[in-house]
Length: 239
Image 1 (cartoon, rainbow, N blue to C red):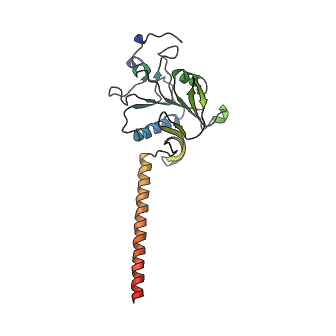
Image 2 (cartoon, rainbow, N blue to C red):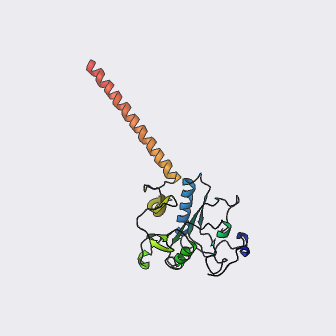
Image 3 (tube, one colour):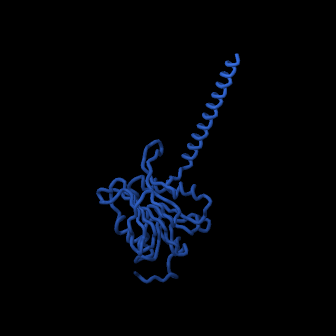
């Protein structure tokens, strides 16, 4: 690896904020952003995490610190939600106290992007603990499974078993879920708790609360009807 003078590294203001590579399907933006919105609700009170979507990650483990890797999504822990109170243009590891993402996500599209080799090697060198590859359409073409989770063990990624997969060091599980989005049935990625229960969106929680309230109301009405029936029956017997 190239020797780098840490005192001569560029600042985030001097670096491009992406690799200018357009996504080639809508899910590459939609699904990671759904994970971000859900996490903003799950960890609403926490200020020590950052979830980036299609954002350049600059690091010093490659040949040139000005050349970033751009995950479809990544999660870092122990960093500010808003760096200095402002939104990040990119994630620059040397400006984040050396904290690298603990989790990265790549979504495979019709044009392979090195998810199973080149990017995997980059994330291994960087020290990303968990690496997920989501490949719902082309997994047979690529000889892999639709969803794979890898964990870095002794500098190499090992394929993990189980879905949703619980990331103990993160405190979250991740896996697939069939749901309805914008009135369309669609498979999405979702966060799960340690029991394997999926975290619901705000809309889903509101719907569940309405259903519980409706059920409680129906139970009350059923009980009142039963009581009225008993009172009528007792009155008839007295007659």
